[in-house]
Length: 295
Length: 331
Image (cartoon, rainbow over the protein chains, first blue to last red):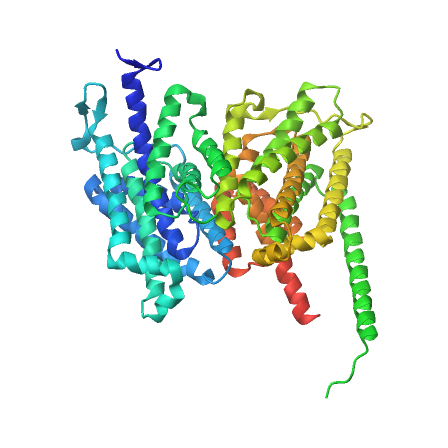
């Protein structure tokens, strides 16, 4: 068997695969954070809760109504997106003029609320979601075994990331969004419905999180607390990458997933801490982050 | 027509006003201290000590959040570090007197605070919140995996020992008065810090950082110092707490705890001296009352709801709103 630094190739590539998948989730989540931050100038502490809602909705829709995976892939993000827009309309908007710290604290409170209610309804032990039949099995690549579902997650996550990047950088709607990031007041003066744009942006960012949640449902254990841990990791990823660019968020996300996977192979005890350690190093060497422009 | 005013008169009026204000404050403080002195004969001392420890924690946090405008999402790390250090030292070295153990815990938390501050000060605003949260999570993982903390089980049976090797702290009343003395000393310290020229600069930074920079203040150094003081006091709160409960657990290191101290400060009134104390009393009581009743599983969502309500409806907090009311109607 081929060995690399004393580790069997199959183990190494297996961990790398898991790393890329985790990275895809980090990328989707930090992308949503970056989109919301761009226009609303807030860090959405409820992002983890929205990711969790996406996953929970997938399971609950299936258990209660028999909604299959493919429908859930659209329906769950849509529901969570609508929920997000309601949150924006009824809560965040009321304090839009205040210090951004308050909006941040508000989203934190919402996260506690949502997570707490679901914990009471469903417990913390986790719900099971059966892998859709067509994803069962995988293919042998010679040096490793690639489960179909994992390949699908990586593919579709990167596709959605790319689509988002394309929409923001290359379309008219994206141009509005970028203009709003620069000067929302001026844009309002040009006749763009900024409040609507803000609602849609928050809804869209939250949808990305919920979409990640649906993708996660068959492979991770679905619990009401699944969002809070990954959110803190994503914060570290955001600090490392900086929120200056959409592309930067995607690249950093995948990169950090891979680094985490490698650490799990070579020095397992540090695997849960390695991203935070990278963050410390980046803060010391390059305080603005790898792709960041402002401090 | 405006009458010509003698500047000396204005000066005297202001002085008189200040004196009256000072007298009022002294009267209020005397009443509070009298209540705190009698309290353990009426209420369960351990419960009161819990409130005092969290009040100290919130007062420490408020120095940074309320007075400097820096939102740290990682203060649980200092609370836990103080608690674990003190707990470990007191359990391992039976010769150590309690106050030395507490001092050591505070010291380690202070050093950790300096490390946090130097790293996080490089980022501003919301990045600051994210960096502190991520750093505290790093500390959390460290405590999860370190054998000396007892991991998920926590550190049990920490001896309370004897203060200065003389006074037994096993007695709840002795313990209470010791905690109270430390609390009052810290409260006065924060009061002095806030009203000192240093504290004025902190407020200036909070209100308008670029202006403070342009006035020639070394803003980063002020921020770091405020952070370190805040971390030290938070660590002290953790040390005290571990001695009072004879227990240090992972709960104290969890991000949830960082959120809780924000809630205490916010509900009580950020940027006021008394606010965090009132907020801590409120939150500890709400948690206790809920845990006794049929809603015992709903503590978290209810706290989340209080969080949302506070931010939406009364951002000034309990003390802040009372101050506003007094100023509007009686001032």
